Image 1 (cartoon, rainbow, N blue to C red):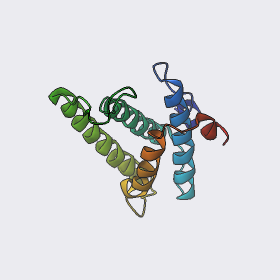
Image 2 (image 1 turned 60 degrees about the vertical axis):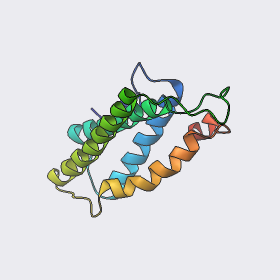
Image 3 (image 1 turned 120 degrees about the horizontal axis):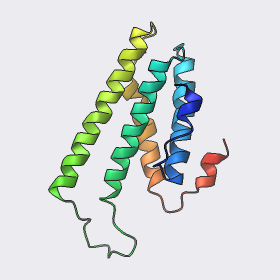
Image 4 (image 1 turned 180 degrees about the horizontal axis):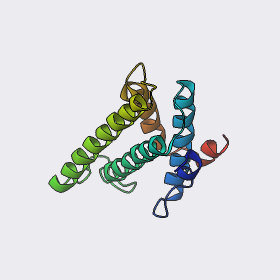
Length: 143
């Protein structure tokens, strides 16, 4: 498995998810190379796993988003099962981050700061971007 293979995405991904995963893989590749981590099949597997877990959690959380035709006072329907799935998905996401950090350390290039600390600003930034109705998918493709 390589970073280029990861950028192809999966058949079940939407067009938006394909754009996101391509952008994510490119950012992670640049992030890891800048820190001296060499590409390996295990590293690519961990990067891919982290990206897939992120997309799955994102899909679940989108179930909480209000529909465009809902009144502003209406709350999104959050079932106990959905909340449980989101919690489990987020735990798998945290585990995937730890496994990627461990893989970097095993490959001989431990990251000076936790990957979760490095990814947190990116996740916060993209959260607002992804839920912005004025978001232009073409902007991601321009890279």
